[in-house]
Length: 91
Ligand SMILES: O=C(O)C[C@H]1C=CC(=O)O1
Image (cartoon, rainbow, N blue to C red; front, side):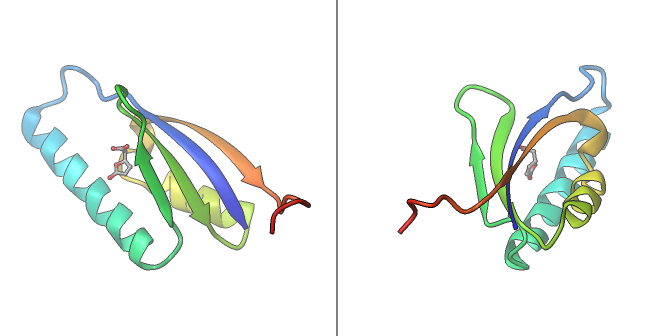
């Protein structure tokens, strides 16, 4: 099942720089791991925003929820999930 996910990141402005770097490093490692596993096949930066558009390919809503809620940045992101179905005109 494919899902379109928009992620808006809002880190606390007073976050300790070392903690911030560690958090972003863990997020990057996890994003790379999920991309290599095929669960996160699309990832684009939204121009001019600390936000991304992602495509996830996972077997169920529950699995997507588990993945998203375990991301290191989850507490600092607003997520908008759109489940995708096959379009009848798609060739
Ligand atoms: O930077 C972001 O958009 C948030 C998040 C998504 C992948 C990643 O490495 O960080």
